[in-house]
Length: 165
Length: 264
Image (tube, rainbow over all chains, first blue to last red; front, side, top):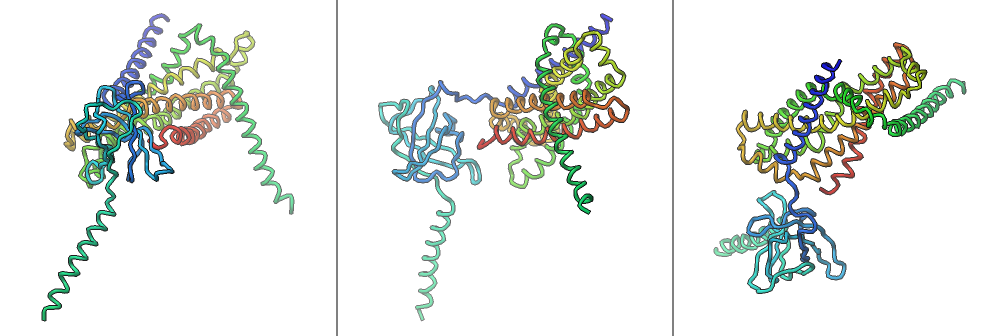
């Protein structure tokens, strides 16, 4: 009886240990703890004319390194602009004249906020607003402009030989 | 004439009332189980025995299915991602689909058919052979002695099984993607780590599997406890356990997913 009970206990112990090991594997090897938890960050706001496809939780990068996350996106009904709240890790300090731009990683990749540090002596603190911003580049607009200018070019180029004779 | 028209309606109504009645009974049964769980704390070896029969005995099917599900994900994911030249994202695809959905859901479906049906059959047979009544005669509460340990055994086993399923699946995806096809190993793991968040993805998956564990074991135990004490009754109850717990898992999965992953 006692012998049987110990083998059973051993199996259950092995099972629980394996399950916990699997959880640990998932936590450490597969996933990562979000590095920008509340309390270790400061937030700054930036207004954009167009945010394109930017989403909450999108990364905030400077020089390609993730320094924070987008925590909130709102529409300001007085300026008709999008107000994006960025939460940046406390260890990353930026000058007050830092500029923010919405970029796309690759052609089809996700959109992120890129910060470019300015030259000011003063550093950004919690609740500040970034003045220099550049909204997302909308691909359709770009293609439209390109086609329009091409058509103009092609139109003038096409008529000149026609006019020559 | 009106009688022939009314009879099916009456049957339908009877069935609806009957299922609502059973739902109420199952809910009362669930609260009774929680109420009588004190015995499990005082005599933990009862729970250990049930973790053995619900968890350890389900290990093989969970591990093997997890491995194959991950391998299929690796193959299919590679086929599609390769068209866009982004086969490095294979790790993300395999890990996210396993951790968020397939791990908890498929493990729970397997658990329902492997352990849930066994629980129903066991309790149904105990009832048919009047062991439950014998316990009551000896002033031992059958819910405290028979039902509650099985409930906690199932609820403890389920998240561990789901985690093992996911881990095994990711290993399967790694085997096919990296070892067999030759996706870059560093990109496979690093992109996976960058995309999978501990709280949003892994913890939510664990919460899902705990909920599924509660749902499956409550359905299995109730069906067994409620089964007519005949051979046919027990066999029907076992079938009902598998059918209704599978449906309940999928329905709860939708509800939980819509809460957890909205806008993520």
